[in-house]
Image 1 (cartoon, rainbow, N blue to C red):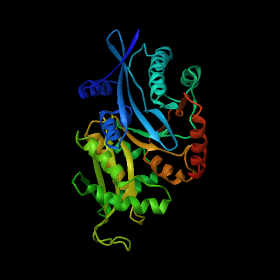
Image 2 (image 1 turned 180 degrees about the vertical axis):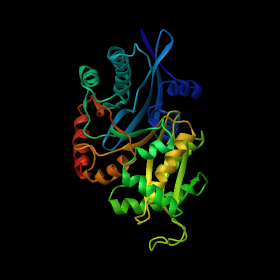
Image 3 (image 1 turned 30 degrees about the vertical axis):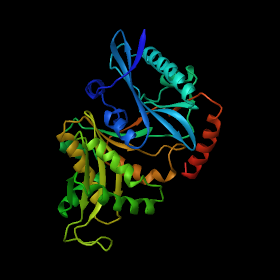
Image 4 (image 1 turned 90 degrees about the vertical axis):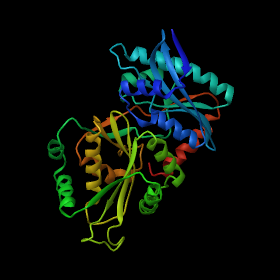
Length: 353
């Protein structure tokens, strides 16, 4: 019989998370701390069978204008085991659903939303459809990702890249592009200057500076976040920024297994500095012993904005493979859900999906 209880100690959470693939930083202890800084109440639940931990799940209690719901971002994280079949996943998910349904009814949440890291297969989809879930109107976090395996030498990784990408990395090196790792007190302000310019140019709504700061601070405490900044060499000043000013930046987040490229910003320039920055992030991932470099989301027609095409081509140029997670799933508790669903469909249209 399964039993669900809160996990109160970081060490217990981290041990299970790391032993079972640390597939997404959105189920890390640090992300829970970030959500609390953002003003949300969270639950860290452990699902046990005969005192053995079978899964963990970070729950975020979201109360927003568009609706109130319980959200599991990129989770739960299941025990890696040969016995971890569709049957056992369904059993755990069903128990968790019952547990959360009671909370939702008592605390007036209108639905439960899960963004799983299970692969998008008919067998996995059946787990959720059998339990009464349906596809969410919008994604909350990346569902189609681009991931690079790092179990190769640097020479092999370069050889696996698109020819143009490899050339531009080497050209940036010849041009003397400087990539700097930073985690100082001024780093968020410097990133935000580039980030706001990027949002204006690409016509998207940026996260607030407070959001970026809270995200960075939550992972910085455990040594699991850095900013990378790329500067143009003095010999090649640009009209936009002048000499030796940062022209691109990225927030890089680490779990035990994976490095994630989560936030990026840049000013357009003819110098291939963004390629050099990604290559430095990949090398940093290898230095830390990570198995994967996760470029995060790429274009998924009908789910992501249509203008993601260029960004997707950029990411794919570094080599790697596409991973499709199941679409985000909703379980309805209250008829209020349909108001949220209608608004989110409008939101998807406005985003250019």
